[in-house]
Amino acid sequence: MFIVNYIKEVFGAIKSLLIGMRRTGYYFTHHKEIITEQYPDNRNTLVMADRFKGEVVLTHDEQNEHACTGCTACELACPNATIKIVTKFDITPEGKKKKAIDKFVYHLELCTMCNLCIVACPTDAIKMAQTFEHSVYDRNELIKILNKPDSKIRAGIE
Amino acid sequence: MWSLSNISSAIHNWLNQTFNPTWAMIIEMFIAGIAVIGLFALLGLVLVLMERRVAAWMQIRLGPNRVGPFGLLQSAADTVKLLVKEGMTPNGADKFLFNLAPFIAMMVAMLLMAPIAFAKDFQLWNLNIGVLYVTAVSSIMVVSILMAGWASNNKYSLMGAMRSGAQIVSYELSAGLSILTIVVFTGSLNIADIINAQSNGWWIFKGHIPVLISFVIFIVAVTAETNRAPFDLAEAESELTAGFHTEYSGMKFALFFLAEYINVFIVCAIGATLFLGGWMPFHIGHWKAFNQVMDYIPTSIWFFGKTFFLIFVIMWFRWTFPRLRIDQLLNLEWKYLLPISMFNLLLATAIAILGWHF
Image 1 (tube, rainbow over the protein chains, first blue to last red):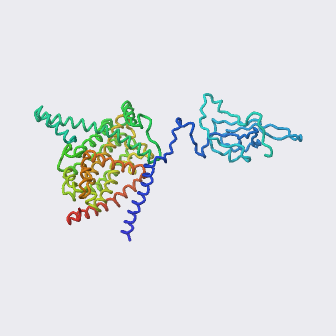
Image 2 (tube, each protein chain N blue to C red):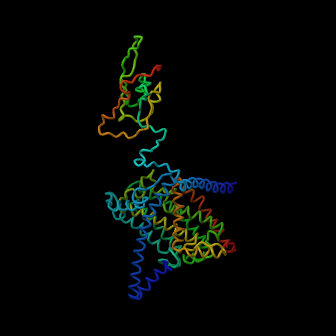
Image 3 (cartoon, chains in turn brown, cyan):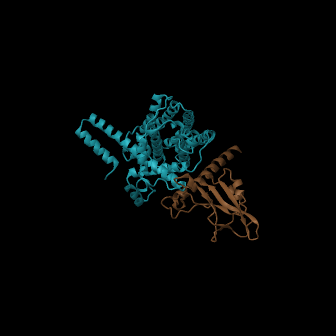
């Protein structure tokens, strides 16, 4: 019946509005829920969200070894040519030539933090770091070499 | 005891002893004007800060907290910024109407201040048709908005103004009808009479169901009339940049901004007067001790407390609900609020005649 539906609609609307107001009222009275970070003041204790993407880094372990095989999958995946991998050929003890990275060049000024290189990497060598204070006075400083000097590929990674 | 009415009558007596009655009257008017402007400025500062704090806390943010202790000077700093900004008038605008519109908005807000009773025996003008006066004058507001929108020579402004016109014209009906409920119960349009009728209980308690319904309708309708979210189609930032005041800057913009907040204060003051007993303290039946304690709280505190409570509720609406579309807005008014408030008026009349209220 029309009039019953009409009244039901009115009460349903009031109920749903009150549910919304209860939520905001809860936030209004519970200040511990506040998520604002007062950044420059709490710089030492700042906690970043897990999914925040600041820059690409090549992870190194204690023996100064990384997992990058120089396959250039990340370079191909990058939509705006942020990554340039310079390869070289190492001679293995058996006398074979093996492809390895010479320089992992990363242009931070071009990077859009799209995460496609991290997805493309077959050996999980690179990841997104959570640093964000990237300002420098010279744009050349934004071109970074990600592999540390004298670093080697970790054994067993093909 | 100190109270606003004692101070005002002391000033009145002193002026009448010192000057002749005509001059005393003129000086009193002058003082009243200064007091209203002062109240405006103060309310603007307080309400803007309150709005920003309430908004922040409801959205799990901190809000202004840098300028002054706890950010209390934030709105003062904003005002100074607006004062030193250039008040631009666009080339294609109708210059006279463009510059006139913000002043009309302010004048309406000022005129509405006249019949409001701020405390016991403290009222600028106790006219016998106070409620009618308020509903009549508040509809001039739409003229200033249409004027601003038209004179700006900007499509966003004009669209915002037209929406605002449709909105204010339609929501005035249900606001008026919900006010009529109280008029029916009291039998008077005089604001002082309406408050005195609530000395043994506020209308929202005495009038039970019909007054409760009309209170809800009143709050919804005045939220729409003051162009605040969820009914802020007139300025709809995401669609029309700023609606009717897109082209305004500097102090002319600030006048519109101030007028909006003053209007919110005024409609909440009217709501508090009609439904929550104005300056009447909260009394419970025959609890003598409790009632006496309540009487010790000054009447002005009661009035401003109730008004600010209603302002808080309207801010709560604003930061909870999403904006309505124009067709939803008109549906809500013509298909829901208006029929309900008409039926409610009938119910209220029957209850008032049969004496079924407390």
